[in-house]
Amino acid sequence: MPTKRALILLAVASAVLATGGVGYATAQDDDGPGDRAWAQVDPNGGSPVLVKSKNIVLVSSPGEGIYCLRANARINLAESVPVATQEQSLSSTLGLVTVRRSGIPNVYCGTNELQVTTWDAATPSSPTPVKSVGFDVVVP
Image (cartoon, rainbow, N blue to C red; front, top):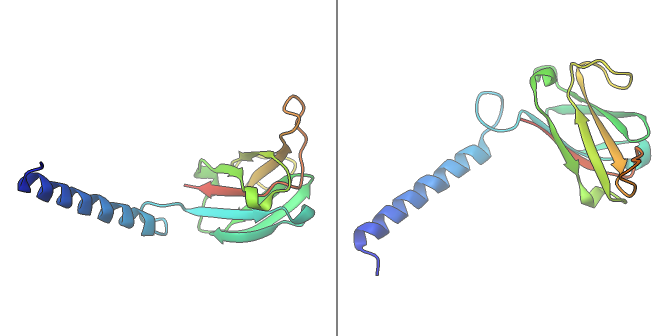
């Protein structure tokens, strides 16, 4: 049976961990921990829609399965390590999602935009870009 002292220490440790978790989860803006920008994108058959977002203000699709995301002016996407993944509830096919950070010139997206490409995962040996895969992207 645990001692009274052990139970008190356990209660204090639980309170500290709970408070720390709430502090991280509610942190916002660039001044503290948390994500600088994120978005949930519905491919919408090639006319993409921002379902939800923080500091991502525009999404466009210059080609099949290719999306360009622009952040508001105070977010420097070139100094980020973005992460993207498939959003199953917005997808009609099993897909793969890749992200290319901004600051790298390419033919589809501006140097101040993230490029996200969605692929058909049915043929892994020869993936093709598709406009049927929704995705989430986070810029920490």
